[in-house]
Length: 307
Image (cartoon, rainbow, N blue to C red; front, side, top):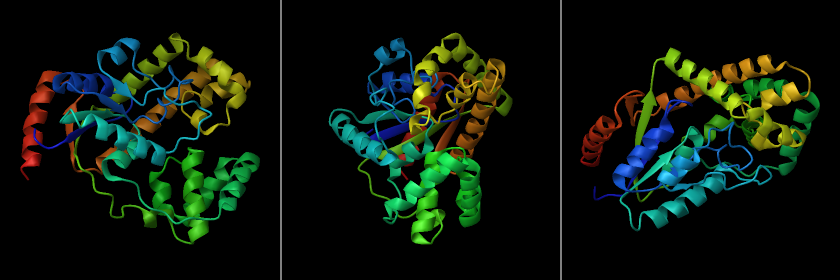
């Protein structure tokens, strides 16, 4: 391959993205950029399915547990950091692999972020105050009223995304969705997307088994020391929120575990909805042999580069 290529491995949670990314990185003798927005945080290892030490030692990974939950680290920060790292890596490599379940973060690196107007910071302060005093439901209803298009696609249980959309709606007087899909920044590399898919029942079964393994591996012990900081944005994450409710005495442990499974399945469904909108993704079945995938991918890449 003469052009610089970023291979982005995407797909729903628990589908096997890490294993495929490592196989690709070994084949191309390259390194991996992690685009999982929760694996950035060093306090969140088990609940975010951080690659094992063996996997991390097999191939050089970047942006894994390099931040603290107390750090303010946005998708814009990640875009800048990832592009800087890619510039370094592409000096000696023709291919770099990126992997992660955070579609927005993958898109930020591949295509750039949409540009939004600057709004009064007091709007966000008031929205955060409302979230604290009134809960998330009122904010969800307001977004549905102001921008039904974005309401249908956003993770409405993510307060950070919710407040970001609302502050733009309120501050600009226009729907947040009207600023999306604008002309993006040019890149000096080509992104090739490879997506892993499976039947819904298979995905859900893999999710349920992964959650059980997380509990066996000590997820509750990981969550306990984080409880006093449960309002931090990084901790508004499936697997942590539910166990916080258990620690508060609101739920039984069994119920909390069932809720983790249910909410993770919902998250996987939203991931697939996001990725299905990208016609550039080369889809492969989760149980296909990695060598076969690599051979098919090479043919696909050659075709795309000759278009």
